[in-house]
Length: 296
Image 1 (tube, rainbow, N blue to C red):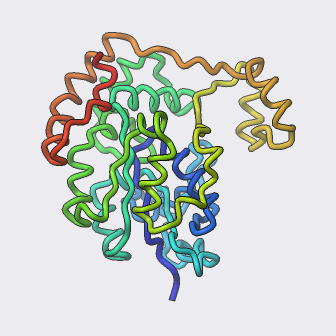
Image 2 (image 1 turned 30 degrees about the vertical axis):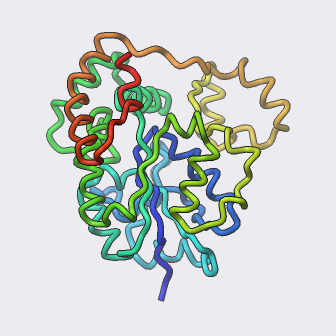
């Protein structure tokens, strides 16, 4: 009988999940497969049932036997994880995860949804899957979508409507099995955040690499030249160069200053997200000022 993961980093996308994953996978009691996001429990369109899409950097594992094979080497690990951020957004994923592992521990990390939406858009532009150069127009086009899925649709707004997404997991798994973290806490107090995460997973927090917890992953960068973009697509992300050389070359090869969100788009999104945050705060029984960081 194969191994099912016993914990899931389900999202939200562009909220620090990569940093959470990168640090946890260094822990000797934790196992993640080579595919960070197998998307096994998400409701996938036919093209993505069991697919490898290089353009969108998607690896889908649609077969139970293939999925469990990813965990062949997980025996003996305390915490066995899947870090597919599609699961938070997908309405069918919580029940599917529960049916496979009802005792699973769920980890959710949230960020101001306005900032999250803009980060998501910039990432789509960087990956050349978003043709619209106007953020506001892209948002309005999203609202006109008829059929949506995680892999091909604009989800700048949809992925940031946290209330219903979190309510689904809480109703199915209960509060004790769901840990909700903040992107801002990841930045301000990474050691405390990872201590909470370790307690949630039942792993020894002392075995985390404390010195590196403040390092961020998947930070914004856009190639300045087409040749650099081609090299990244081919998987040559600096691995062949010494770290010291990479640091010197980075400012020359990449634009790392993130563009600011325009005021019209900010206000447009705030009107959409504000009532959703209020509902989420009522659900959790606490205020969440970090989710309105861009309101100030």
